[in-house]
Amino acid sequence: MPPPPERRADARLKLKVPVELNIEGNPTPFRCATSDLSLHGCYIETMFPFAAGTEMELRLQANSTLLILGKVVTCDPQVGNGIQFVRMLPEDIDELRDFLAAAEKEAAQASGQAAGQAGAEDSAKED
Image (cartoon, rainbow, N blue to C red; front, side, top):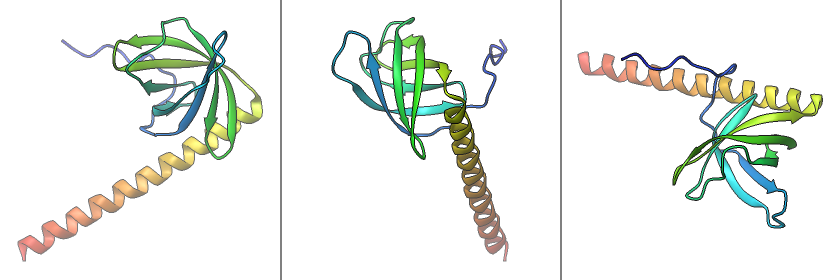
């Protein structure tokens, strides 16, 4: 059976970025980190996930603090939550886009270096 079609508009990057979640009616912020991040959402791992539909304010610590309004769209018990970004200021969107582009470029360079090292090791074994 083929995997379900990808519904996301943007690629997700495996990034651990500190984030603070503020839920209306709860005076204590929930501090955690993303396990993946895209321009329109993120996933957080938590043993006690929030219910789908929960709205929250996120403070994402990218190059600076980005303020985001989000909504829980997936709830995986004892695993975590998928959070869709509902509203962001235009300058925060630009900041996140730049942050993601830099992280993607860094990951590609690291991957290329690892592949280059593996190729060099293979060549050395052949000698």
